[in-house]
Image 1: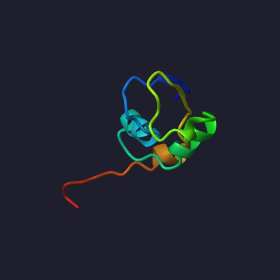
Image 2 (image 1 turned 90 degrees about the horizontal axis):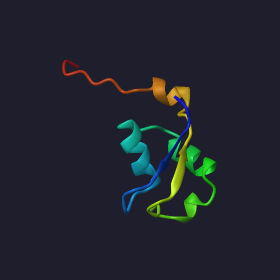
Image 3 (image 1 turned 60 degrees about the vertical axis):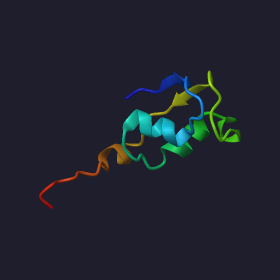
Length: 73
């Protein structure tokens, strides 16, 4: 996956909500990676509409650590 730049279009979004909307599962370390890549973003509890956010590549460990749910466990 390549780094993407997204523009925040909804009000009241947080960095962790961006991660959830993008990957639909927990991604350990992604919030920190996004905050590190986007200086000044940590100053906002909610990301202002129109803010461009660089979404870095997720760590390989996070992609490999997908929880598998089985109905028969």
